[in-house]
Length: 333
Image 1 (cartoon, helix red, strand yellow):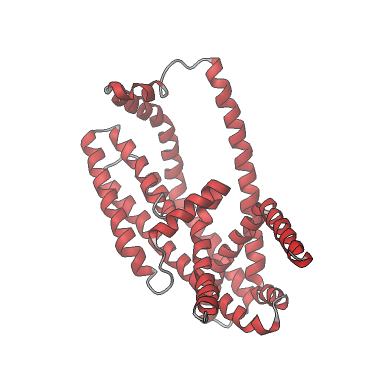
Image 2 (cartoon, one colour):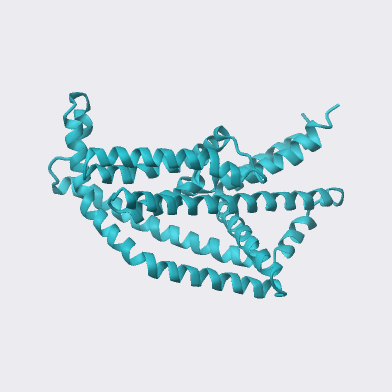
């Protein structure tokens, strides 16, 4: 083993440890890239319909987003706030209902004992510590979200300069290939974001209308959660179904079955018809690859890893196809 090999091995280990210690910084930067691509799609739409330069177009996009958020907030937030309060009142009844169902089966008696019982000071102290930890985590999450948004706006303001900085440290023979790789990644990620946004909005509106027709409780809150969790395929829609189904159980088992059937039909239409139709020209992610990425990044980074798993897979799929398959495997002699 030569000295050069030893130095390369040591350098690889040091870089790996450095990247692992900076994983949260890298996660924030990648989240900012994803948001900046979404802004870039909107900026391109504004510029195609006007003669505005990029800074002015960015201001217009941010202004329109703020106006849209304000209008939607005024229309939905009062009812949503009321339904959140109602959920807080209904949650103990739901736990009691599930506990009674578990107690009906002797084999599940151990599970039911964890849902009810006497609430004394010894049991409340760990809960208080958990609430304090949750409050600290929420504050940390807000700071991270603010940093992501700030970096996203700065990236969207002048993406050419940031691309040029990366291209400057790329060897000259590979700069043209790196430019094409950037364009392919931006197109794939932008197409994925556009398709998933349309899909999530459609799921939200259909779920809200369907639950309202079924007269299910807290229809708006349930629909909002179902729409947001559409961005987490495979895991998200299944987890989102638990809330409207559980709340329907408080009224009657028949309503619970109706809500469950409605959500299963809508979930399958979204997974096998709507989303593939919207993404047919951009990306084609296998469910096994998507689920493996979500589980892996979720285990390493928690909830932020789950949320950013799919955008990362979209980018990695383009990189693998362009670099590994076309540049290495296809040229293997």
